[in-house]
Image 1: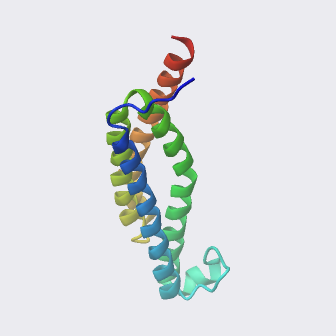
Image 2: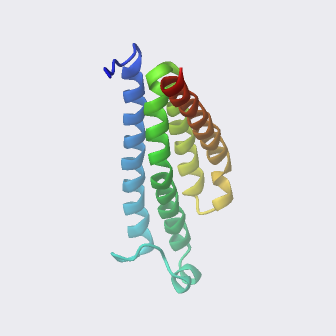
Length: 146
């Protein structure tokens, strides 16, 4: 089987690269929040006692959890975008980039220390993820059976 990438696949790569930059941005935000909260390495999250005495500790936990959630989602985004892009590169790139924009909104909202403020970005990201998963499934069915 010869794999030929369709015209427009470069946009798929660009959208996924933008996701990598969002992860880097989140890493930088974690470092700043860790320093502001005084959370020592290798402690992953602020503990209850730290949360009670330091408001910055809750913001740190929110920034850290936001990053963890992104790392939980990125494999799904990567595989579904790459597969979808084989048949529908423009849809894959656009939807993946929409996920990136939603992830930025999610990060900004969650980083306030008020977890409920992650809602709009979370909803947009979920819509993009589901769109990519469904289209990747359709693509695989088309490639394997038709």
